[in-house]
Length: 485
Image 1 (tube, rainbow, N blue to C red):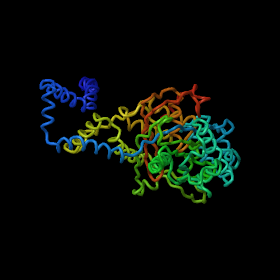
Image 2: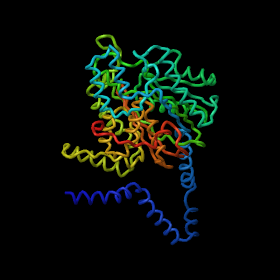
Image 3: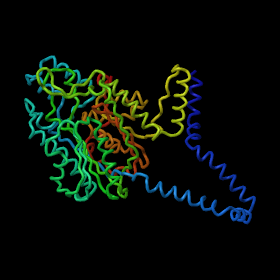
Image 4: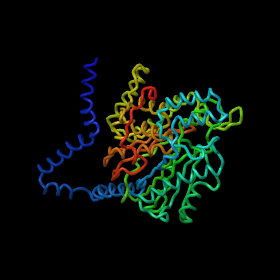
């Protein structure tokens, strides 16, 4: 059995080469035969036969392909590019080591000893390190959750990320045509987009949308929305996409275990991304955005649910079925994404496996497509150790392929929708990105949603500048088994 399995593995590269290049395999012999036949007849005979064809046939032979190509070029969507991106750089004075977090929890009378012990175990197994950061308001005892403090956190994170982005791209705020911001749990009036327009004095005709309540995968929803808006904007327009989560007003002060987990995992962070339909200075091309929603099912809808506990404390209740529901959402997403990105060899194997299972009534294991043939890099939402473990197992990824996700969780914690950009920054800071490399971003969010985006690298980062600039030399770090398992 082992011998035959080894032989199949050795034959698989040959199979992939043949199937993935099937057009060339078929076309080359046909073209060669046509050339040989033309050489055999000679140029005079070929011209004579062409002149003998009816004029209508010649017209159709030339006009139909040309018209088809013209219609395709006019109707195809515009390519959307990422000019650059920037992540909020956390400050050392916002750092919250485990000891500080637990000491503050013990002092606050709203938590009993049982709750503190529970959070201690969560932190020990969370995969977070000692350098994650919380906003200034949560360093007070008790934590401040007022509107002013919440606005202060949002302005610090969002403006810092945008300032870095504008400095990197050297674009004027007046050249921004579209603004899309996502923040799930804090939606003040005026909105975040209004706040950005006022701060940077954007044009009065700028199109702007603030997405709220969409969960940790909202960053990819924002990308899809910005991409669609760019399709109807003038050629070369710019879209600013900002992804963040405001932690200050959402710290849970009660004792329900299912609602204490976000306190231990979520940390401050944010990212700003500049998209355009002009690829002249672009660094990545947006290839695909695929969204899947399972909210029609009651269990999926309520698995991440904001509510009050028995004492009126508001928090996010995470269901025990969360990982199972996330797994179902992932299956739906990769089923939709697979045909768009997988090479023909993987699609053929999957189709044959599907047919065989139907014929044999499921007596054989389903074939899991190898997405490593479609992507060189994977940015998996750093939602927690269990999320990364589950996706690594489901997609059969190596430790190196999920390294960016684990290290982002360790260094920055769960920064919600912006975590994917910290992971991309990690890959670039490590110098692993190459021109032509493909990146798969996968995010999960309340609702329940699994969204993903595929990118192609045009120009890797020229230097290590970003959230990892001061610490990349220390990573990857070893995560003890007690944290990883």
